[in-house]
Length: 340
Image (cartoon, rainbow, N blue to C red; front, side, top):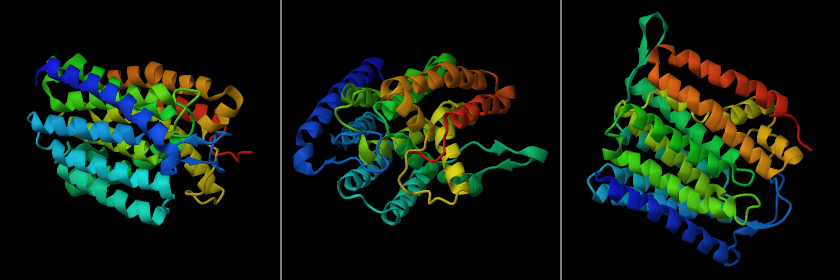
């Protein structure tokens, strides 16, 4: 693929991501997307949500363009991102129950893992390995958790958008450092186009946010990141360890919070404000907390992910090195503690 075409695609994604966000922002009252804060909210005034549908539509459009330019497999990716984005937008409008959302999420992720093809085997202790159907099942479960934790972490201004941008840019940089031909691959430009669309949305979502991402955006963005991860894993361009490390700040916060709440026998799906980032935002404000999470990803997770990719012999120990301090940080911040 010609880099100039890719650059034009990314620029258009950013431009239309911004325009689409402004359009949703303007139409939000008529669409019923302006609702009062609830018990999960970290905001005190009604603000439009669902602006992330612009990210979903532009990412789908980008995948479709790449399919037309010679990556026919991207039609499936585009269709699945569209499906999960529409599910999220319906949830933004109607507050669907988990009993309705979860079966659709399962179908989408099973279809995605099947469509992306075989993944490299994972070596296990005692000379064993995980591959084939067992690996596909595990990856599907991880994908479902990633989708939902990304939604959980979209609770203050700018945090989900900046995290997705940094994770995707980190992956692109890691790929480009070790492969001079990385820019020839369509998935390379899908990652950057998704980044561009998210950046266009972030202009209106940066603290103080004028519009929220909503489930439409968080669902579509999480699925797009996961699809890009599967594509690069399958092609041997980026390893499992790097992909585990890059989003570690979000993964740890959501997982520690869930485990501590479950230990208190709270229902996992009940609305709450006890994530580490939510606890910190009450003391530090949205902007400072979002910047802290940006630094955790850019200054801690990215270098370790790069090291894991460049030195595979120590890649799994580096995953532990990446996660351990983040667990301590989230416990210190009060992840999972009862919130006021």
